[in-house]
Image (cartoon, rainbow, N blue to C red):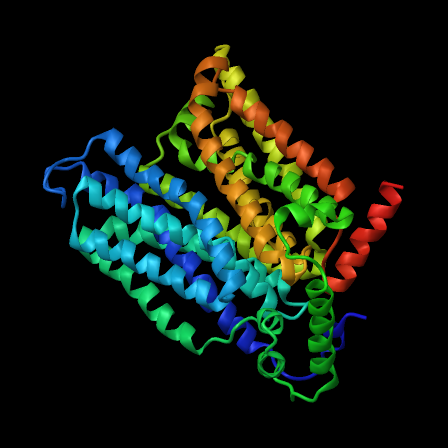
Length: 469
């Protein structure tokens, strides 16, 4: 029986506080993501803090260096989270984020800006790895979905804030403002609890019991607390009876292998969804679809994080009511329709036809909104819910590395595909990917809303038996 379904007393505010605190690293990541856009104009001017205007190629190197180092950062944080704890991992994220902004503040040559972005990439590799694990492991079952949506909400809010302050404040003021948050967060995190699951894994049962009781506002001897900790102890005992867990040994187990394949496939559709490419190449996409009116750069850049925030807030309100599966199916389907409409409009424009100027804008906004409302956050929620805490760090590290690679691939292949096969070709591809994602989710992904780890594992095993007899 789901322990947290019995939850009738106590409180949840500490779970919210520590989840928000951990996700503040995603807010700083959003600041870093948005930093290039308003700063490019400054760096390429005669008043550049580097002492000379930077070329387009140099800006491109500075921009892309974060994604490259993030790929390597994931495995580092997986090891840290599994060996030293989730809390230590998040504190290290804030340290790397602070170092990045300190370098930008102290030195502004091309080399040092690239080094600063490399440090921010190392931090980013942990943001989508350690933070979702920690939030999941401190949350009761009926809060996991809502708290899991914070990862996207905080990131897009950070992007929006950077666009706003970058437009009105000078270079050094922006950097100082961005530097303050990771420093404050790292100090506050010292008061945050370690993940109860990690404490059980390390044999600190009493401390785990106190932590669970504190997070839920119950006494340590409460039956609910004792049941939760006992469940983690039993699972820990089972895993300790097995050989040392590696990805290879994990894949030898039929149920884990099936679950791993499901998640990797889901992240394939998530990573190649196409919304990230739209945000990156927004102006080119709008022109290719036949938009006839001028959109100011400020309004255009602000619109994307705003609609993604609206999507994330909507998801937070309904995710525990509607469930993960129907929402993800809906987001994939709407994205598929939007991408197909964009492709058709590009073909019509190429053939000399005309289209209503509002239609491509609506299609683009819908696709970006669906990304923020489900295609991006829901796979991360499912990722943390479908694997036991004993193997979660290793699996999450592998999957998030794969996700970062797909993001890099998506942005890299857009221009060559558009130039060789036509401007519409990437969007036909995105439409097919999103449709396939909807069908795949409908058939293979289980509903995890409100279910405990044990219930989710049993559900997957039953599906496994029914599908592969």
